[in-house]
Structure formats: structure tokens, C-alpha cells
Image (cartoon, rainbow, N blue to C red; front, side, top):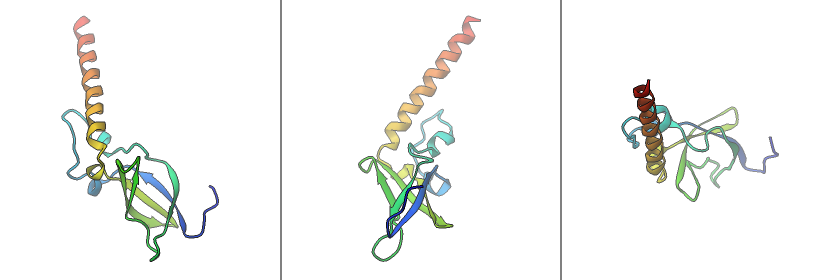
Length: 115
């Protein structure tokens, strides 16, 4: 891991848990695992503590379109979880995922009819 600057804490980005994905958009036919998954899950980095010594409650990535919220700080590492309900890019991403699932289902149905 890279050297941290004074005031920085290592962090990891993770998939959403129930608290974060509650009320998130979920198109028909898309499994929950897709709703929970954020585009930056598994990434590691560092966050700077605020002047009062706390960690930022949210991380806004991709010009604010993808949001991760602080889940916990344990063993000196902050864990942030994807927040689909707060991410403006979530709905278009889920629509694209739903389109892929629909195309896959149509392809499988077509293959089944050809047999």
C-alpha cells in the first residue's frame, strides 16, 4: 500500500448492504446482486479526515454520480458501501443491466425453440 499522508485513512469500497440499497431502483428481472454492486467495488484508496477528526460520511465519485457511504472504521480501515438510492447514475446503469438480461433471456428462448 502507498504511504499515507497525515490525516489520511485507508479505505475500501464495497457492495451495498440492506441499509444502502433500501428503496433503490430495481427493474423487473434484475437480481438483487446486480442492484447491490457498485462500479468501484473492491477498489482501495485513502480518505482524509475532516478538521474535527471524523471521516467523511459520503464519497461522491464520477463527478458526484456514484455515491458510497461510510459503513464503519475497523482496524484502521474505513469501509464505504455503494449507495444506489443516492447515486444519480444508478437508474441508467440498472436500465442497461436490465436490457442485457432481457437480451440474454430472448437469446436463450430463441435457442430453445431451435432445438
